[in-house]
Image (cartoon, rainbow, N blue to C red; front, side):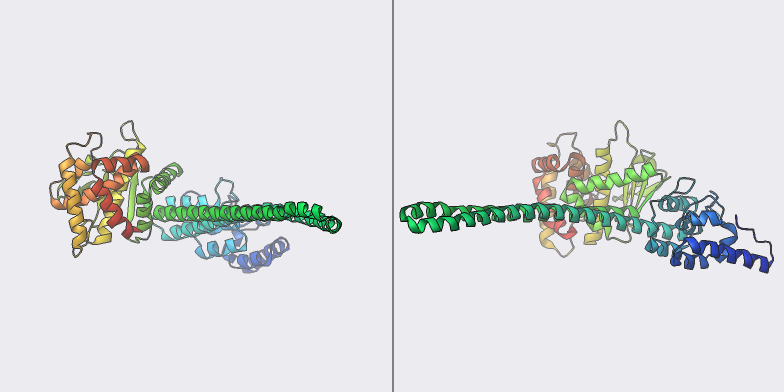
Length: 452
């Protein structure tokens, strides 16, 4: 164990120099350079810990004072909130997810813990964002490597088949030469054999052409799937960055991520909505996973009709003025995940349409007379059919039942999103075509292209 600072400069310098000499023998030059920046903390480090690539941790008080609970140099950087170290160490080989300290934390989970303990300290939030970027980049590299390995496997298979066919062609060519020598002596035999030889190379070439086409198609499919998975992961990560979860735990974070993932995979209407919102820098989402209402995260609010409500009256609210969504996401026997998803999707759609058209939440621009006429026609259809729609599909009747014209238009514009989020893409679209087909057509022709 390194000696503590006893206040004697000469003694401390000797101890410090001895520690560096010991570390230099077992560490790359880059690590020694980094340790030179850590002179202020050397009296807290153990030579044995450093050789094993460990460093001190902190107590759970949130203090930045170093103790000796173990970990890598990246753990030290996270606990100190030193963003410069966190940016530098991954480039030198440190992993945010591979090693754990004696408390069981990886650098990434430790960064999440430090944010929980120090919610007002932006330094820890910056450290967590940096580590998440490194982890996402590492995942992308692994996915890219797997993709390339699959492509190489396909190419090797095709190469083997091509070699086999070429070998067969060479064998056929040798047989042809032998036959030609024989045919010189026997014209009748030559004619018969030539008919056979004329078809064999063509069949082989056609087989090669067919396999090459299949291989090209497979490679294309693999690339498309890889690109789609990357876009989905990036979109969900961006939305999670905008999301604040009350009393966040790993389980609650996974639950919120699952909501976004289900919406993304549901239908092109919902995936396009998330792609649009991921680029909205002012958007924020507040989720309470422990309640059926939003009272704890939004005690009071004014709805689009101008009516004032308390948070215990609703499980969702889209705040157009603050560009925020509030969601109570506790699943119960009544509120299943499909209902929570439909309400969440509705709130996100209302904010997206509000920001897309800048017309108080209406799904058309003030100067766009064509879209206005099309939406008024769809609304007239909804009003005429509202009593014919089954009671267990209340979205249209809720929308046209709003007290003001602004409330009716804003709420009705989000109905297609509610349908596919609640019932799935196939059933949701079928129900829309049966209940209010003009509204679905309006959304697909006017709103969806702008979101994309």
